[in-house]
Every structure is written in structure tokens, then in C-alpha cells.
Length: 96
Image 1 (cartoon, one colour):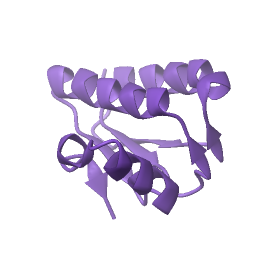
Image 2 (cartoon, rainbow, N blue to C red):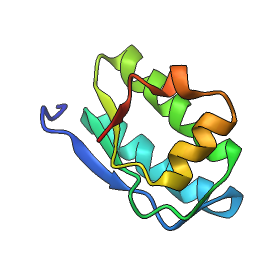
Image 3 (cartoon, helix red, strand yellow):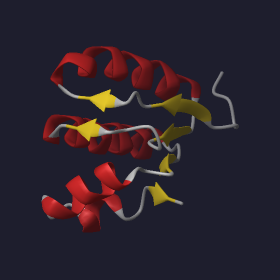
Image 4 (cartoon, rainbow, N blue to C red):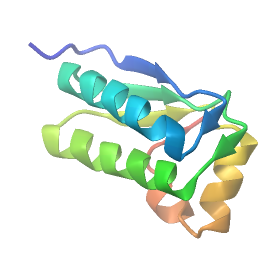
């Protein structure tokens, strides 16, 4: 049974290709439980693929009727989002 309280997922310091499999599995587990809040405050390095994975997770949550937020995204994360021109698609999920 889905939980109503958001599951918290903390991103590691480095979110690159080597980290994606583990993060994806963690996100999938959290998404199966209900709403998800991703803590992006610790991220010092992020890959483009990681950003697209977060967007995919957001869409998965939306289709399931759950909220998906990214809280306290580091300046590295927000800078990469802006540099890639993804600000408009991330705007609904970025909090704090």
C-alpha cells in the first residue's frame, strides 16, 4: 500500500554514470512506496544522464499520481540544469 508521506532519497556527492544504477534502484523503490523527495544538497558533480534520470523519475511519479520533488539542489545541480537549458522542465520539481 502506498504511503502518503514522501520517501526521502539523498543524492551522493558524485552523481555520474558510475552512480546511476544504484540511484535508479533507490528511486524506483521509493517511487513504488509513494511520493518522493530527493535531497540534492550534497551534490558536487552531476552528469547530464543523471539529470535526465531525475526527469524520468519525475514523470514516473506523475503517471502514478505521486509528487516528486528535488529539495535543496546544490548550485552544481542548478547550474547544470540551467547550462543545459532544462530550467523550464525542472521548475515544477525544484524546491528550496
